[in-house]
Amino acid sequence: MLNTYFKSSDKNFYLLHGDTMKLLPEFEHKFDMVFADPPYFLSNDGLSIQSGKIVSVNKGTWDKSQGFDYLNDFNRQWLSLVRDKMKDDATIWISGTMHNIFSVGQILTELGFKILNVITWEKTNPPPNFSCRYFTYSTEQIIWARKNEKIPHYFNYELMKQLNNDKQMKDVWKLPAIAHWEKTCGKHPTQKPLSVLTRLILASTKPNAWILDPFTGSSTTGIAANLVNRRFLGIDQEETFLNISQNRKIEIENPKIAEFYKNKIADFINTRRLTEFLDNEKANETIKVVLGFCQAKEIKKLNCTNKFYFHAIENKNTIRDFPINLFDAKRLILYSGGRSKPIKLNGFYGEISSITLKHKSDIEGKSNSKTEFYYEVTLAQNFIESIDLKFTLNTKKLFEKIDDINLKLFQQYLPAITTWERVIEANIQ
Image (cartoon, rainbow, N blue to C red; front, side, top):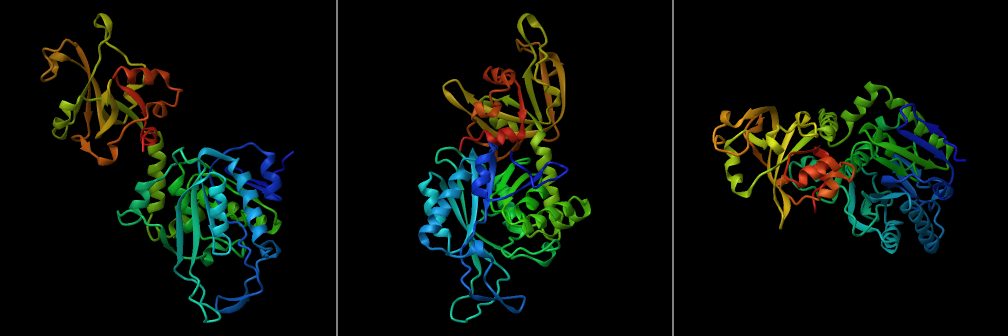
């Protein structure tokens, strides 16, 4: 039986004590994302400078180099076990330096992962070079890969663009190393900063995602995950580090401390941007969206109107009360195509102000229509055109096989209800 070292009261933060190689095969849970900071095997009795003092680079016996063959075998073993715990569309982030990152990249390819990026994290405050015979070591690499070559992954492109002054974010990240305010519960020799973990979690997961860290240490991964409304499981064989992890989780259960950390994280510092983003993310997750069919010839008229009409008639002139919670919809998105053409969003959408049942005689231009009644959708302003909402829809993914009623309505070009999040996910890349 698998024993939990620590389970938080909100059930969003779990810790397991032991060898990750032995523990991973003991449970069946699948994760949306993995972050791993495996041993770099660089403890070679060298010296470095930390806070102005000369210190040993040795981290512990777990970080001692045992040769290249051992390194490859180690990486192959843990990556194979972790891969089995990933959902089919999950991604993994692996941190390293020249001591281990080439081995990790090789094994990822060997096991069938698709490498997406190799992030270079440039530390804004690296320790100086002690020997003065080399350039200062100021970077680490973080490989980002997805589990399967052919199964698409999630990427929050828009947020990363916002954080980069509305320009595409590059694969070089200039972020600070660990800060003093992140060590209130104790120190770990290879602790990563919240700024790095927060960015990669927001880039590659959605709210409530499950995140695994097989070498959790002091669980910066879990703290970042919980701060941004994701769930976490961490594994480590050092009880001292798990105790730090537990205390860090208990610390952020205080709302004031959690908010303080959110406001200190780089990318969002001195603003409430992170909190505001999380609020919007949570709202968008559940925003009800009604999809409306629009003929191609009508698209050019949308820029100058805030009205849209659904036929409200069924057989025998009966007003149709669509079984789709139409009046719960907060946003209208239009699509075109169908039959011999692919179904595509045409870029036009708007926030719904009201939905009213009207007779054709009360609607300009509809008096000669064969349809007696319409649902008039009034938007808060004229239709907005967005290039980000111009894409081909994966309708199976849109309704996820569990919403047969709305799928059938959609196939008949009738108003169908879904959520904003599902619409974005249904983009055929």
